[in-house]
Length: 322
Length: 258
Image 1 (cartoon, rainbow over the protein chains, first blue to last red):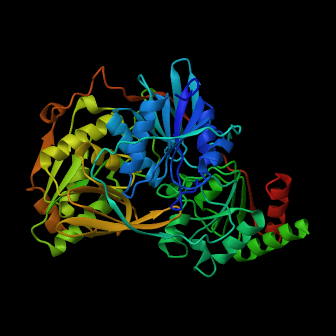
Image 2 (tube, rainbow over the protein chains, first blue to last red):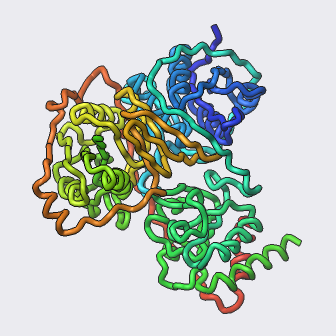
Image 3 (cartoon, each protein chain N blue to C red):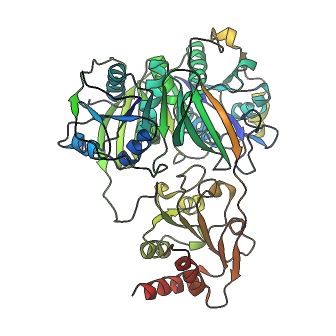
């Protein structure tokens, strides 16, 4: 039997529809390594994924055959891996799929679940989970009263990376639970639209709001983002107005970001928007309304017309690069 | 068709929300309490199905303090048939495991063909309850649906993921959760508000459901520390006099951000 090290942390790595590792893998293993020995579970039949997981820090890799149905086959694999590894904690991504797997597994195994973690540590009693609550207004630590727990980790929240490990993998034998599951009728992969960084976990974010005025003019946000190498976000008002898809939304009901730089263009700074970005290191805002609440939290605020200020900013930044 | 809609009273996101720094529990006195918007949208999914299928029964299910009744009654005014609220002192600070156990027991009590929940609440932002309920109840779950189609025997919809869009389906009974891509809820009118007062409103305790909150053999998730982040102060604010773009570029370069 394989040695899973002291304090094994069973880490479910998400795979995309093509079986390849999702981008969240490096941060998941980095977080696991901070509290123990990362043991990765991969539900994939793609070539080379176990080696990739090892190169990102998995000390041991368990590989299970994917099933056709939604969620349940992954939960069955996680249950089998849990039995084998007897970990201190089970780590899953706080993504749509990760939360389903984590929720189902915690209910099945009778384990406590801590959600939307932004960090992990240990104290003398065990694993401590760090949370950022109410849009970053409060920091909360949680723990299990006893025994192992399930944690869903916010994507992009942990910067730490684990050291590469020699590839050691084994095939996991999974007994299907027979739990009723939903069917995946079809899947349309999103065309990888751009070379821009993903919003979740981005180091820089440029967001546009209602002040952009139209979907066409929203291009200005993208231009500045490309000059800065930033991801593109939006306020709910801009999403509701149809300028950009919902996946761009930063805020209470969208993506929460904590970048080094957050640039808010034509965003008034409603409290729900602030809930998704106020933990950014540096906030820059351009708005024509001098009383916009965004200025209350901006490190550098410009009261002015973004259609003159932003092109000048882009030109100035490009001149410095040249 | 019997549809149970999960709703929840939360602190209004339009105001400041606070945690009690002693207990770590939501300070309910610090904010206005409202029905969570995503729960209202979930109700709208049920109501629009009922518009075309008059034999639909819509039950609101909520767990929370007695004071939440006024918010839950808003859902009755919008058109739900009845409400079930689980109220018990022992549920103060309940973790997700206990919450899902209580809601699953309540769903077994009400019976259901379809359970509709929001993808995540605005206060806890957990997003795991629908899957936990599905596991406990032995039914399939379809979460994060951006569109929903309900038939007599099945439910299906579009599920938006990071790398694409899946079309998923399940036979009933099932649990689904929806995103805010689905339409906002209809307004309650005076007739609805009057009718709501006469609609069945059942209050259940843990004893009624046969659930024990304090169990030494059940591990729980507990809060062990809570602190408030210091508020952010405002920095420099300039009014554009023709060179604001230049000044901003200088600021970004100075701070190694560009």
